Length: 243
Ligand SMILES: [Zn+2]
Image (tube, rainbow, N blue to C red; front, side, top):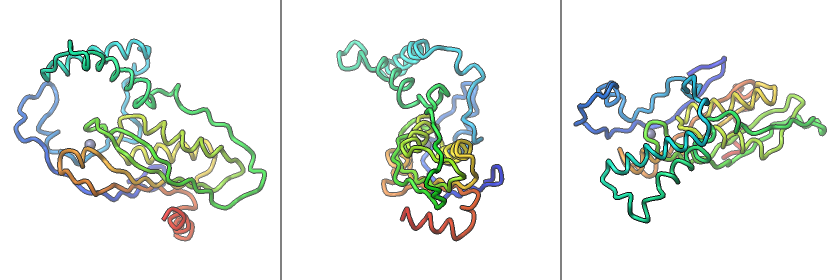
């Protein structure tokens, strides 16, 4: 895959395990969805958002999600008058909007302050083992992983915790791992005003372990290298640090 002259390398396994008996179409091409199965095809590097994505307030979104989640639970036969279940639609709606999918809304993009690179440190800076939780956009179950990020300063540096926050911002969306990888890399390039950025993500997809092929040991590795990180020497140095 290519974007802006940078490359994205992906290493992952294919899953099988789609239900074969679904026939209802409901306005969508179920046959196509079944054919794609668990291949986790991503369509673009921008999160597909509706044009009116932010017309509703967070409160309005939560009310709507709460209503629909109640419908889902009742459809499954759950008794929402039970004390343990009655608050669930509200909790899920709040969690979606305010927590695990809060990265859909640009107003939640971390505010990043740049500093001058006073020490003239012009070697590679590596921030490794940045843990994150995301959710697979094909199944809405968690992706749990670590991101390793490196850059070579063009004269500006950012606070280290901001790299974590940028990873987490993009993770808090329905995602595919390749897209998460590119979104983090592109944002860092933009902020740091350099092409010399590497982002490697190693993650477990619960849609592969808790369902489908039910493989609990595999993980998916994606990497995005640009600028000097396309050169073997620089890339190998980065890989050595995160090993
Ligand atoms: Zn999935």
